[in-house]
Length: 141
Image 1: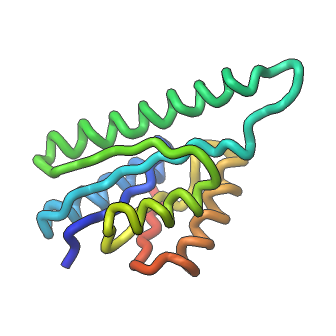
Image 2 (image 1 turned 45 degrees about the vertical axis):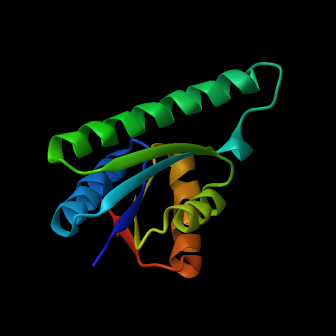
Image 3 (image 1 turned 30 degrees about the vertical axis):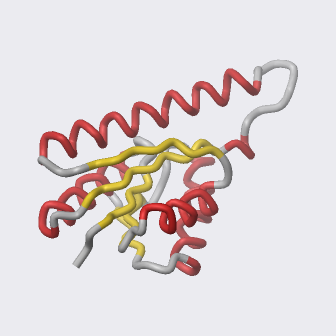
């Protein structure tokens, strides 16, 4: 049924639930999980108080932690997993990842890590549901 599963991961509770779902799908089909975490560069602070590069590095660190958790869970389950950190608008980067990985399905959490990210993820989810060329599974904790 599925050979390649794209998992959008940000470390949130819903993302953790999405990880479990993606790994369950993969274990039942023998699919490879391609986990991607997108650093939203459009929201980086640009003022004299907060260094934008520091914000970007903090977001990249969060992305690395989210993907490391996915890698650990996949390894424990005996599932092949590849991870990638992307930067830019999440919908565009996830749509590109679908094409790049040849994903048969996308799995992502319903909400992100913060109130703002919930807004961003909500729009990301909406866009993926309308534009993704493959099924999109939205998981809530």
